Image 1: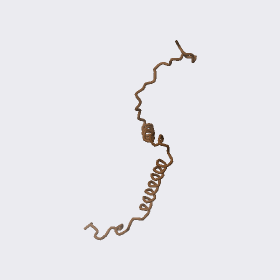
Image 2: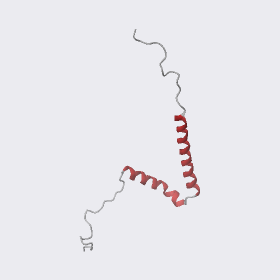
Image 3: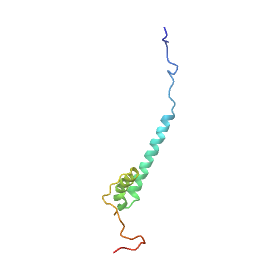
Image 4: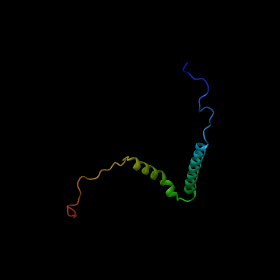
Length: 88
């Protein structure tokens, strides 16, 4: 018979605690960042800054993803001539 009976060599070995500590540190850092953001928004920012934070975040995200949401187009030709003087 070619099958070997018994426990595998890696059986009974526990994982190290490093991943648990690493995840704890990441969660703590995330909680501190969210807490800092909330305190600054609630107590430091002006009402105008609080109002525009969502629009600013959306525009920053759209810009980083390359999403173009504007409905305007640039003119194909300039209103100025090649020497920089306005054409009439």
